[in-house]
Length: 227
Image 1 (cartoon, rainbow, N blue to C red):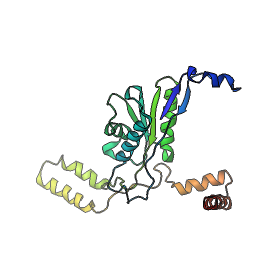
Image 2: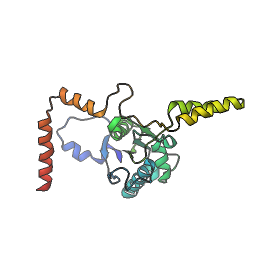
Image 3: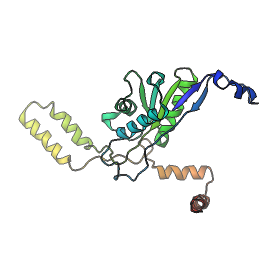
Image 4: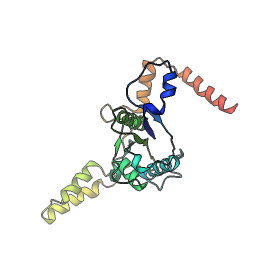
């Protein structure tokens, strides 16, 4: 949860600071919660992403005892969207018991969607458009949208416009022919065709990060945890 604190709340601390005087509110992170990280297809396999986001929002409000009349906005980030809950922030907020008068919207940006939710919230706080915001994100790989392929979808839509039996039979055959070749979610980016691995390799080359240094960092962290 993010909040904008008035100058009177921290005046003494700021007066003692040698940092140059800043304009605008002091934005602070009040508290945070999260659901457990688990392997996909296990504990959460019967849930939807909106269920996880709902629990996080609900738990955060309970933990902070935040009154609804002090909450101005909710922002959530996600990448793999379920069309039933395309504005997952809004749906999760309503399921969590948040009054419908409190607005909520969803953002997406690769693997940092929740970060974008936070910075968007900070922007609203900095400009005085809000005083308290809940920002977060959710991703659930146990349930991803698997669609009929484009030909099958096109035929299904065409069935509604078919006027006679021969036309309907022809379209029906097209539907049946394409039912067993579903369209899986793409791993590669739509515009570039690049996967995350390829992007990571380019990034490593741009910043001269060698595989040896990455392995050193990884095993150093692992050994530290085992100490």
